[in-house]
Length: 97
Ligand SMILES: [Zn+2]
Image 1 (cartoon, rainbow, N blue to C red):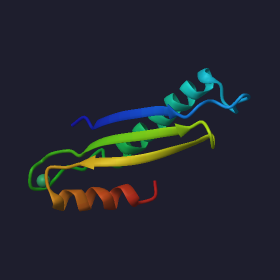
Image 2: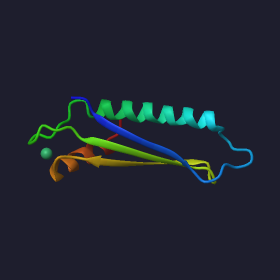
Image 3: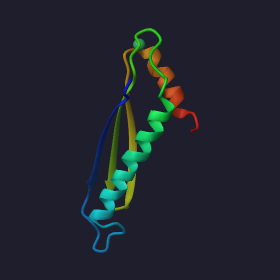
Image 4: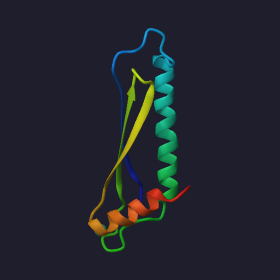
């Protein structure tokens, strides 16, 4: 089963006069973020489906790069068929790679 992963990465705030990352580098960082988080999730969840409903989890990864502090804040949102499987998914998510 293919894992459903959506990314919503964006930039907020006005760029500093001499930003640490220019637009191109920001795009690259977003690409790398998509790739590494996607690969990590696919590895962790390769064989994990709900025992009761045979559904895979769905992930929505949102990331906001704040121009003012030059940091990327990533949040994971998980959709599952049921509460029980959500707990299982959270458990797997929190395991070290
Ligand atoms: Zn379920």
